[in-house]
Length: 183
Image 1 (cartoon, one colour):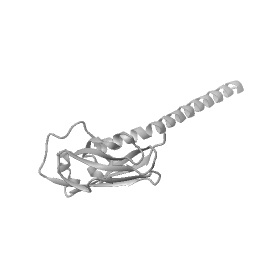
Image 2 (tube, one colour):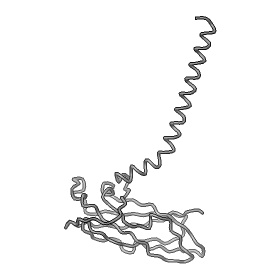
Image 3 (cartoon, rainbow, N blue to C red):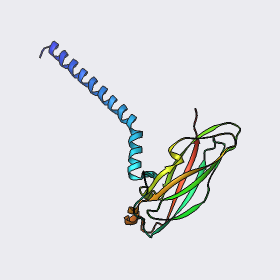
Image 4 (cartoon, rainbow, N blue to C red):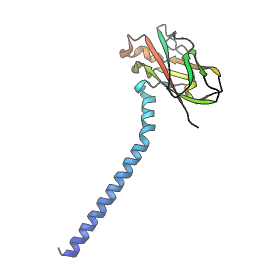
């Protein structure tokens, strides 16, 4: 092989390597960009990390087994609101639709927008905790000194009763944390 052929082979290898590395970098950027929506979809489907499910309507099946659902409320230090559950717990039959409320009050003299994140504990119960309606689905804007009752309509999927990991779990906690939303 002469010097010219060797140079062409080296150039082809360099181009192939550069193209491969460029494609790899583009692939990794795509994976990083898709990671958050994929993780959110994974959590929504599996209940991983206490992520609840969304439902259009309640269950057609109501079992006699009852579960106590406790409610927890937290606020970011950057949000000047009061936030608490209107009731601290309810007892609900598995499959029964229940409507409860959280109460929020803006402690300032200006409009403030907030957004709530949520989770359910134990984590294994989250896959069966279905919300039909929730204030957490949208951002909330409270006017100066305004107080509002915000609904959460939910049910526990009857499949909960067939999960051996939840056989002795009779208390579920639904927790929200509100954060400020910048315009």
